[in-house]
Image (cartoon, rainbow, N blue to C red; front, side, top):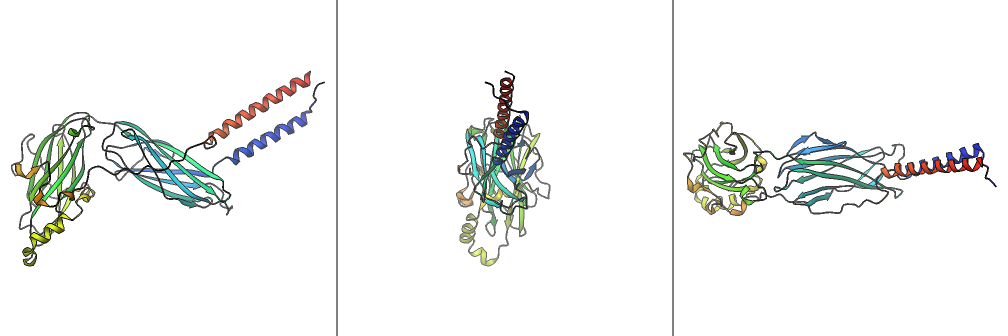
Length: 390
C-alpha cells in the first residue's frame, strides 16, 4: 500500500522545512562584527593589513599598535539589543621563541548600530626567526537576552630578513642633566639582525659641544647568539662655556662597509652653574642626575643634530678625538649609578585567557548545516516520488 502525498502538501512541507532552517541560521548568527583594523609599526601606519586580512612588516624589537573597530550590527530601532561586556582577545602565535604573546583589552558596551574602538600594543621580541606569524583577533560579548555574540579575524606579522641590517634598540644618558659637573656617559645598545657578520663603526657626535668619538667592533650574524649584540658606553666632557640648553647627542652606527647607517639621538640638558650650585655640585648633581630615568632616551627618536655633525671618518680607524679610556663595554661608575640605563629587552604581556571555540562558534558551520539539510530534503522528496510511482 503506497503512501500518497499531493503536490501541494509536498510543497507546503518543503516550504516549512526551509523556513525553519532559515530561522535557525539567524538564531545562531552573531551581531558583533570586526569592522576595521589598523596596524602601526614603530609609530607609522602599515597599510598591508586591515579588516580584510593581509600582512604587516615588523623587525626584531619593533613596537606594534593595533586599533580595532567593533560594530554592533543590530538595527538602531531596537533599543534592547545592546551588546555588553565586549572584550577583544589577541594572540600572536609562536613569535617569542616558539611561545605566544597574548592578552585582552578592557570590556566595553556597544549600543545597537554603534561602533567602539579597541586597541592594544605589542612588543616584538629582539630574538626571533624570520617568517610570518599569525595575529588572531577575537571579540566576544553578550546581549541583554543573554545571547552570545562573537567574531574573529586574522592578519599576519612578517619579518623578511635582509643581508645587511643593524638596529640601535636602546640609548640612554647618565646623567641626563649636567650642571657644574660637566661629565656624562652615553649607553648605546645595538644588534645585528641581518644575515651577514658586520664590522660596525659607532660614532657619538654633537657639533655644538665639539663631541666626536668613535668605536669599532664586530657583530656576528646569529640573533640568538650574544655576539650578535653589543652594549657600548662612551664617556664625554661638556665644555665649560657651553650655553644652557638641550643638546641632541647623536649615536650613528655605520655597517655594510659603511654603505649603510642607523642612528638615534637623545637630549642632554645643560644647566647654568652658579656659585651656590658649584659649592654643592659633588653632592647634589651626582644624586639628582643618577636618579633620572635614563631609559627614556630612546623616545627622543631620530632627531638630527642641526650642526650636521657625524661626518664620515676612515673605516677601521679610531676618531682623533676619542680616547680608549672613554669607550667601554661597562658603565663608568664615576658617571653615575649604573642602574640608570634602561634595559634593551621589552616586557612581554602576561599570558591571559583566550576563549576556546566550540562547534557553533564559527558562522561557516551554519551554511554547511544548511546545505546538508537541503540535501536531506531533496533525498526525502525523491523517496516520496519513488514511492508514489509504485
